[in-house]
Picture 1 (cartoon, rainbow, N blue to C red):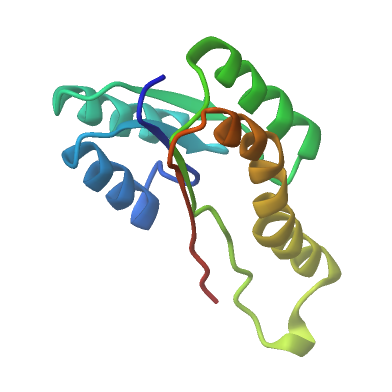
Picture 2 (picture 1 turned 120 degrees about the vertical axis):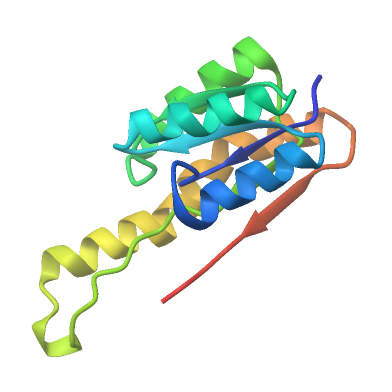
Length: 141
């Protein structure tokens, strides 16, 4: 099994920087995106040019079933991950009274449910590796 790390939300911003840093440190990286597939593929290509393996997984981490299906398919093909960086998240910048119910629900489903939806299918395969591993979670406003 390789030392592969999944970085959610790694098509741009902080997630991209984390993915590139991990590749620089010798890890293979699974780049994740929800919509920005071309950007995620560019990050994966950069990682490959650095001498590491990389692939892209595209799914909505607020969708529990889709998350589990994509992650379990990837594990079946490539083995359990060494680590996961739960970076993906979103914000709805607005004053609380102006925040819509839909904005509130989207933020919660992405930032909170996404943590559970990603880690739930990954933890037992990581434990079954019987090797050290890492889970890192980031949070923002």
